[in-house]
Length: 132
Image 1 (cartoon, rainbow, N blue to C red):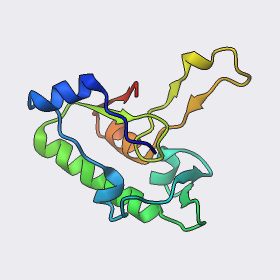
Image 2 (cartoon, rainbow, N blue to C red; image 1 turned 45 degrees about the vertical axis):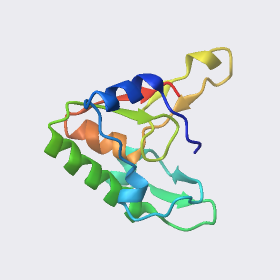
Image 3 (tube, one colour; image 1 turned 135 degrees about the horizontal axis):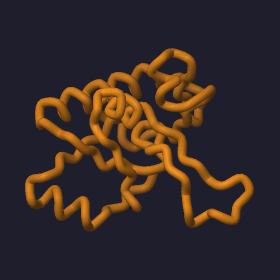
Image 4 (cartoon, rainbow, N blue to C red; image 1 turned 90 degrees about the vertical axis):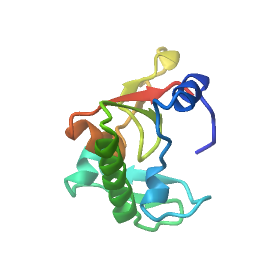
């Protein structure tokens, strides 16, 4: 995806109330990297072994996405995090949400839940999608 800074998240970071992390990097993927998508379900399905994460070149990068999600959960627990603000429309961080800006679209746009979002939610951490 693209790099977009949300000024509200930046303020939280500057105040010491947020920790920036990238699950894909923590999972061992390079930057930049090929775009990827979840095939066969959503982040919950990836965690349960029913779906895979495949990059644009056709490579299965599921293990890297799961490893990155586990690393983020570890860091969140170390920090005592209760909430996470994640990038929308990402196979790692996507937060299942209805896109109200596309309300007249048929069918409406629904962002699937990413692997990291699913794991954090399972661990009881509330996840929110950044508006940018």
